[in-house]
Image (cartoon, rainbow, N blue to C red; front, side, top):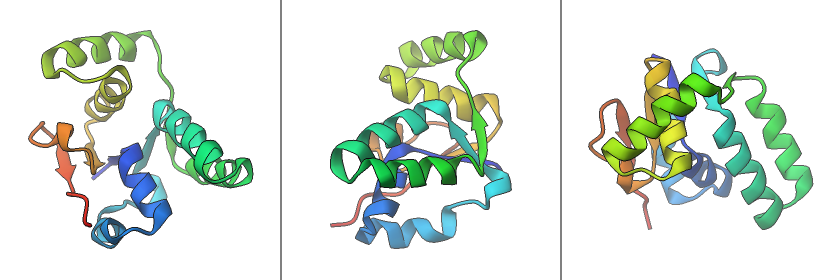
Length: 126
């Protein structure tokens, strides 16, 4: 099964948080790992702010080993519809639309995705 890993799950993994332990078995192999360019944007921004530009570059190199899906006009329109339908932010709608477009599952730790079709939600552990 192809799987998109949302930015929230990436961050938990990068922080090696208690939640990361629950995510380990759910993260796909690179040939089944879809990375929307929106996730690359969010990860790069977060890593530069919270860690370092060097770490951000390392993670971008890792994402490039996966299936990177850029935002195009068709995907943008689908995201707009999904945003209105499910009351998702722009970034979340793009990530969810990419998941749906690729007939994949979305692995996330963001509660606002919980209950949406094709979502594997892992609650954050404290």
